[in-house]
Amino acid sequence: MSAVEKAFHGLRHMIATGRLGAGERIPPEGDLCAELGVSRGSLREAVRMLAALGVLEPRHGSGTYVSPLRPEDVIGSLSLTFELLPLSGLLEMYEVRRVLEAHVAAKAAARRTPETVETLFALIEAMEATDDPAEASELDHRFHAEIASSAGNPALASLLAVFRARSRKYQIFTLPEGPELRQRSDQDHRVLATAIAERDPAAAAGAAEAHVAQTERWLRALEPPVEETAPG
Image (tube, rainbow, N blue to C red; front, side, top):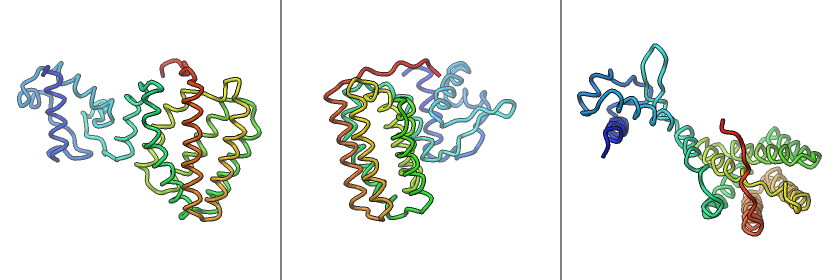
């Protein structure tokens, strides 16, 4: 085990055991280095790694603190590695996504408000009106995010956002078959939104699972290239 790994796992253990709680400032560098048996450079690299994962928060002029450790934030950090998945790996995860999307759709139907229904149908109309595949992709993301948010579990919504972020890198709407696929996708959206509007959890779950399964079949059949974007 390298010195950086030793520091990383040492800090991680302190947090996992509750010795360092959410929102607490970590001990001074000198104390930590002495306890963990590592250099300042190794400790600082471990801190940077944990900060990238959303576990620690360096604050200029104040020190480094354990983050609030909200489940949705910790889960959101999965995007750092999840976005490295090739299409084959992403498709392996689609079985998980089908189950989760069906679950949140059912909960959204049971909990739906007039505002949620209004937002969903407004997004559908915007999707149907645009000819821009990039805009359609963004609206599609917002549609599914609205459903996940209205289900009432931020951690689950965060996990689904991680799934969708990687899926959006494989654009099928820009392919020659894109216009036809978009039309069928929009029809799926209307079926799903209608089930939610009618407070029918079973129908909403079935519509969501069918929609995700259809997208999975398109990805398997068409194997679109990953969308190239500049690093942010």
